Image (tube, rainbow over all chains, first blue to last red; front, side):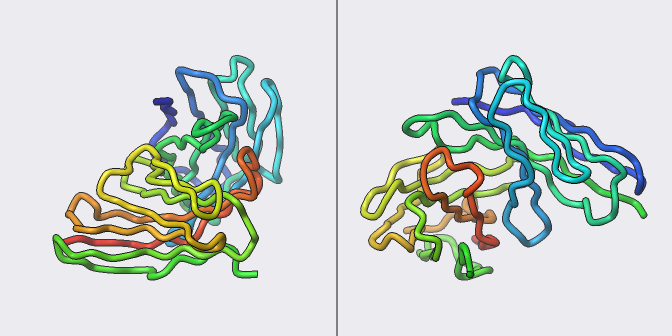
Length: 113
Length: 114
């Protein structure tokens, strides 16, 4: 089945630093999504991308849908302690079971005040 | 508006015991999903349902059964629990296939099988 390679697995940064993480796939997706999961909670959608080349921002977060449709990245600018959590990318295609989301393994972000 | 509610939040089972995890949503969503989350593995789909009375297998269905007798509820059953089923289980719902902005997750059930 389709698999997503998400990197890095973990990051330890200082408050105020910028963060970048990415996701790649061996096959194309029609939609890329980025989720954040805080301890003891389920994932919450941050950004959804629907078109190749699309660049979308949500506050200090910016994500891009790769031109090849096989990758996406997420940037967080000027990190703050509440950015701590696990960030997941997810890809989706349309039709049948392929409409289900495929998740990356996550990037665990730690922010030192 | 509660969204997606999972019960119980925590459970410890002995090997061979059975249990049912309940997921309830109050958003009138058609699609419901059960995922398991293991360290370093991300979220893997166990089973899903595209409507009341229908279920389908996901990526890791072995050892689990599901039922969707009512639109708002999606039950995940473990008939004979094994230590390999120790995990955090998440339920999610969406109004329709492809509605990625409508994918709502519950807060999870942490299951330990000893």
